[in-house]
Structures are given as C-alpha cells and as structure tokens.
Length: 204
Image (cartoon, rainbow, N blue to C red):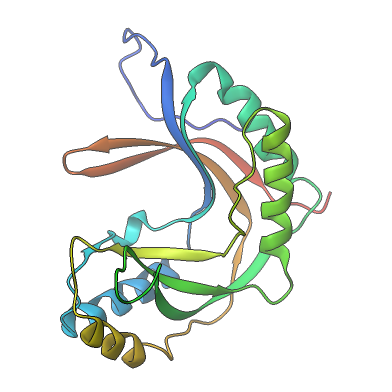
C-alpha cells in the first residue's frame, strides 16, 4: 500500500482521530482555469469566500473525523476501489450554486463525465467503504468542484447575472489517474492537506 506522509515531530502523541476525505488532485491547467472563473465572478461583484485554487479537489467521499486506527482499513478500501479501472477522463462545464440562487451556500463548477467512469468509481468506493463501516451518502452523487462558499445573503438578480455570464465556462478534457486519501487539518490560515494513501487507477 502506498503511504505518503509529511515531516513531523515523531515524539508527538498520535492523534486519536483525523479528519479525512477521498479525492482526486487536479491538473495545473484546470486549477488555473478555475482561478480565472473565480476572478470573473469577483469582477461581477459576487461576494463569496472563494476556495484557494490549489486547495480545490474532486472529492468522492468525505469521511469526517475517523479513528486513526481505521486508516489502514480505509486506505485498503481506496486501493481496492481503484484496482481494475483505468484513468478517468473528464471536462469542466458550467457554473452553478447549491441549493439555489435565493439562498446559495456553495458555488460550484460542473463536471462532464462522458464515459460514466467517475460515477462507476464513486459507486465502487461507496460499496467498499460501506463494507468497513462508512455508509454511502443518501443523496445522489453529483460530480462537481466547489469553488466558493457564501458568507451571507446575496442579491439573487446579481447572482443570476453572474451565472449567466459564466454559463459557457468549459475546459478541455483532462485525465485523472491517482485517487488519494487525504488528512485535512483546519488551521487559522486555512486547511492543510496531507496525502496518506495514493492509489493509481490501473486496468491490471
């Protein structure tokens, strides 16, 4: 199993739980495109707490606080979900908000999954995680990238104008081949992500 860790004080007592999620990192070209659409939204006076582009991931499973003793089992499930399937080809398309323009909480960009590879991987990951005690989400999976979160009330007409202006946002296709189990540490300066397990999507 491919474990990746950051440097740390080895005399420190290990944490009993860690905040964890399973996600893909994005290619630099896609991150740059997301930064541009965020800047466009800012220019249209959309007031949001914008996610730092380098911190945007394609999350397949948010686990929350999990016992550190479960990490090996979770990592094995990630590896098993990745086995036997090749890289996933996607493109980014469109900008929207959850749950709606009147009381938005999240700004997102959509994902085009023409071959259904992302959906199948998500389903397999949910099955593997359920078998080790982490139940599947009740809501249907909708692949997206969160680019911002709203801090308070916002003018619906202004938001609609901005979304219409960005409706043609689209990127070229890109390939993802490494699924990662991350630890997320919430710091005053923003979240810090540590790669714990990396699983390469391979047909063999």
